[in-house]
Amino acid sequence: MIDTLCPLLGFVGYSGSGKTTLLTQLITLLRDRGYRIGVIKHAHHQFDIDYPGKDSYELRHAGAAQMLVASQYRWALITETPQQDHDPQLDELIDQLDCANLDLILAEGFKHAAYPKIEVYRDVVAHSPLNPQDPDIIALITELPAPAAGDLPLLDINDPSAIADFVEAYLQQNGS
Image (cartoon, rainbow, N blue to C red; front, side, top):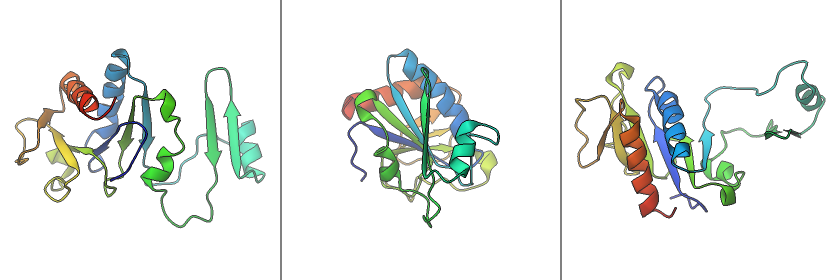
């Protein structure tokens, strides 16, 4: 199990299940309740956060191995990893966060890592649920009526407030 300085909770499921939409709602609700949330999202594709013509892009493409761009409002660190032949591990990414200023880390994806996860499942995705085979899944978020989930708590994907209540209870039990 991944060891962190602040609580970690993942949201896993197949592409198209609604994870990002749900997390957007959930983060807003938790922020409004006073929680400071960090998020790590796994991407299955190459991505860029800057683009040609921006100074950060030009400096990075000139050969900077790391590019940190900052303003009064935010900062972002872009690290090039051309020698890496695999996706970064979740625990490596957690080490990049400032846990002293967070109450909870939410991860989207990383379904094969060993850490507490909530599965987002919808029939329209046409895959079997992950939960029967993954002992780290602690709840199932789905459209009701739900598929069989064994002893897992079932949460309605259309009730983000109830999901926020579940996450808040999880935090109270796991160190926030």
